Length: 296
Image (cartoon, rainbow, N blue to C red; front, side, top):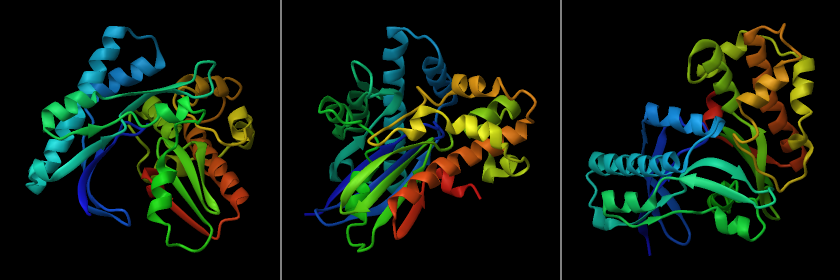
């Protein structure tokens, strides 16, 4: 039996809330419509401040509620745009906004905020959330979980397939004999961080600034020396590792490099760390998706 569901996605880049309406049955997931809802700038600033520094329980609770309101507003905007009857929607799926992800700690956990109770109350549609923590409790990484969807979406393909998603972080799904998936490392997150620091822009549109620079091989080697890149999967990562402190620490030995050359090298880091994993896969077909796929 076909049922209607709404999906909510807000990634590491904090550049918007993706809202989709899908018709799903046991065999097929059909995208009916979608929209990108703008991310509240003040909320984004508060989230990044919390990730990069200290916070309080009060701030944590307030951001959880504010994110719930943001997600609910995004759903209601899609409903209004498409003139949908809420009673026709089976459920909303919301994985929330990841603030911290540490599955390999002594006490592993992953924290996503965006109160599902607020979403349900403000939309009058039941909301399913908290997708990661049971996997971590069972010894998994809790991320990425796109591989389960990729397996469902591309099950008819007979060849060995690799699906690369370039978001704030980049991840790869390997389909063939079963399914595996893991984070390859940073996708857009360091590029966004650096251009915001140097030029006050939220992202490098079409990779234009990186294109104006030249990669520095010594800096790239230092980037790639981070133990994460040589770690065997399963593995996952986020802003708790690849962040402003990580980048500025790496740049201490390379103060003479021009800002645009740093950007070009960060882009090469994303490309190289993804390509290294693709080459290991022996895939016959490579599919690339996510915002980073628009970087020419």
